[in-house]
Image (tube, rainbow, N blue to C red; front, side, top):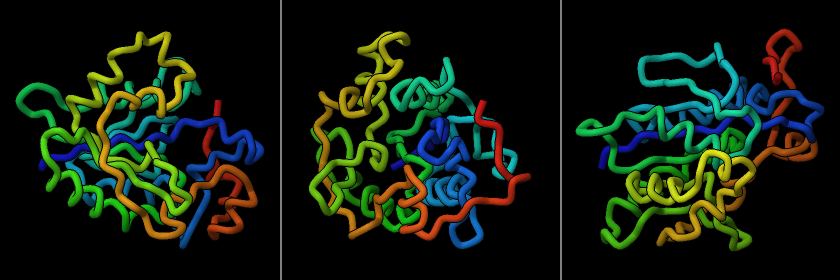
Length: 208
């Protein structure tokens, strides 16, 4: 199964005092780098949707931005999908990943295995956290079905749209995630709990 990835990295980080969450460091690696490395481990191309990120590079790493900036995950996802290869070079599936889950890498092979062995009636494999909540930004979707679901909305309607609303018509297989794997960082309390620290001031990106 040929997989591409879209990593969403364009939030305002308002609960972090506008320190870009992508720049927070876990085990000497930024959250963005950890997400890209995790996604690249199971995918061909990886599109990062967010501000310019000089710390990531490579022939398989593509950069784009949702328009307007900070218009939410659904708009960012569509921007990422438009950046992926189309036609005969299109992938079969798209991994959609938030940039702020430092423990997610171990979950991704399980998503791949689940979707690869699923029937064609299944539109994707979505992580299920230990509280019983589906995590649409830790999921592997069949590309055609995901693109079709997103195309139900105009670009204007995508602004502020939740991922749960976007994926509502999809038939998704829930894949239980180990405890803490899908935990994300939205606040300094989350950062402390997950071992993330603020980078040196000069390493912080521009959030404008």
